[in-house]
Length: 377
Image (cartoon, rainbow, N blue to C red; front, side, top):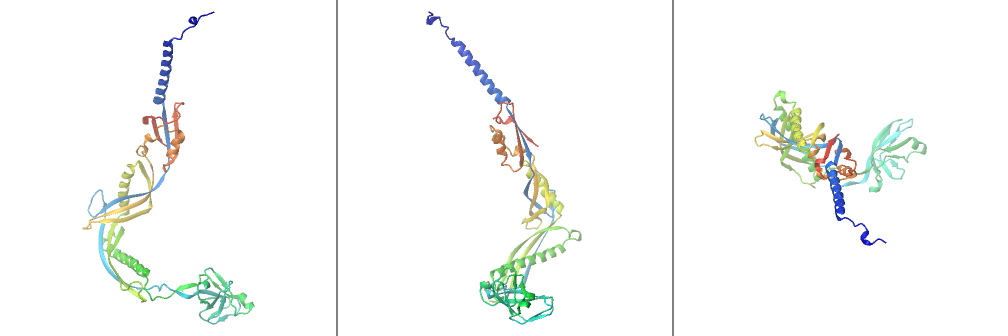
């Protein structure tokens, strides 16, 4: 029988050596994983439509960075008479226009107050006497027999004429095309909306008159230039206030009109030069501009009328050019393929995303930014 002393004893140095080898392999694997791991991300970009906005200086003096222009100003005072549009109150009875149709072979006379009856038994009466020719028609006013909203008819309706015999009712009848409603009572009271409408109308009238006069001041060879303008009202008064019981009123306005005349192609070039610079700083490029979308407004004018600040807006078709200015690689570190795809789904300019990881054992984007390659397709 073997004693316990005869069994081979484990060698502690052997265990240490094996542990060291395992640790070395693990460290080597980690080093290889982090140094060899790479991610190639390919982005297929889409064209975006954006509102592009910038400022351009129009100046009467030659300056390379500015837009050549002619800046003119005038001030006009005009008075115009306006009618009060109504009292704001409605007539007691609904009314409107109907067409009497005569499909008979003889003319038909109808006296004022001839009855017209709708399918829902709403009774109207014509307001004047008419004679409807054979095979013809005549328009005539009609008023509801009863007061109130219940007599209003808003849909096209066919009426019979009860005063005619049954056979004639089939051939002679009335139709309404427009609503028969309670109309607003005639003028006699100034409404707040009347004054506001007068203000807007007179402002537009002064503006158009001023622009015509200013264009006449241009040299003959400059009168076809494009123009952007602004109108500043310096004084506006109405001879009557809201609720005044009058049929008409006078509105007087003094307004200053400033016009900037320019060449459209030079404005486009000046705006595009600034927009290209501003857009490139964000990593994008302008592919094209929608010329029809151009909108120009004056934001400021120098006291001496030698320069004016213009705000220029276009609809532009843009795409990314330098993704490094938009995408921070640090936001991609350690992400799996689905996570990378989900990350780029928030970017409207990205159409598709392709993610390639290598070597084969790599399952996520490396944690070293330099090991990520971003490509544009």
